Length: 525
Picture 1: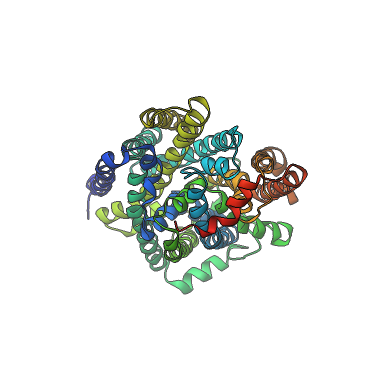
Picture 2: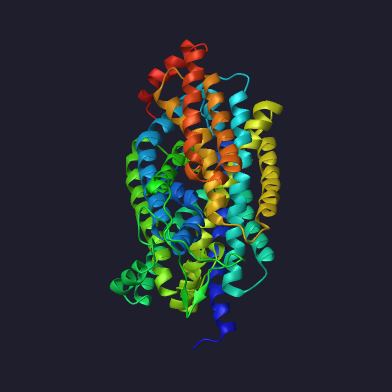
């Protein structure tokens, strides 16, 4: 039996080895990434199918996949978690099927766009850069929030594993991500994403299989979970009985649940969960991977890889949360604590060094996403605001300097957001997800498939979608009932209506824009 301090040392050793590999990748790509801003921000459009696929998925899922999603399943049962996973799996496939290849072509045809704001500006020939500036501000706001959610994961993980100070470890984790993003740029981020994507799926499978055995097998697990009202239902949500401090009550070692909660006969819960899939059409960290693919002909192979990875990972994540409740019924008694179920299972089941490697999967997910958020937000400030609006004749070196300065400021803002260790990773991510999905999703789709879309409609859609998400979340969602629906749904609808209505009520796009739209799919890129 390994003594506790020795156990911690072995876990730390495994995680330290992982960190060393990640930082080494960053240093390896210093020269290639510093060649020019195209290489730093988009890797010179040289990603092969495996790198494109796993980089897109790993940067997308974040620590939310290994902590947030299992936490929801553990605390309130299958309904919200399962429908969210189904929506995400469907959204992943549809995004690769209908957006990836057209966007890869159009982004190069439209002025060799290397960021999403670039694409919007070039797609609609927006010489005043209104679309570029608006998109850059939206990215800055929501990615700063997103980065904060990732830093929360760092702090929670170290606190759960070693009982150390949350704030200190949260800041250390954030600085490691900052270091290899600052140094190596896009190529280092994508290469570490490939490594991290593999670690994530292996970690999920190992913990899922082990948790079933720990809970006494499939039959015992199902029997226990079926005894909790609404826990395994697809239309109701389990309702933990909480005390005045928000902690679930326990009687004789058994957590207490009330009657299952039904929202609109289950329709609101189902629609809200499935609507997560809509968010994919507007996720900058995923869309930029499509734009950086080596060739559009390789997208189909990437789609298969990404979809399989996504389905396996999501299924394991949900099942870990569900089975974890049977294996450790009274171990985690608040919604925030429940997000640690993956870590606790790994600590309980695995030898120290292997536990460290598996738990590195959480770091893999979190580092993958937060590095993408920092890089994309930095590129939005440097390339789209600084070079696009403020100093149009800026050199590559000046643009990259501003990008790295922006990374530093976003890092500090994200750390400020993450200082609250009781914040829910799932809730923070869901808010930012809705913001991007509503602001950019309808516009991306209509820019690729509706030739009548114009710049005025694009602006109305971005602003209308983003504002709807913010206002719905702050003012209407607390009212409950029908207003309890996920804010992405009304935001997506408002943005779509705004784009169509304003485009039809204003002047049609120029002949050059229409010609570009009619011929972009013929490009051999």
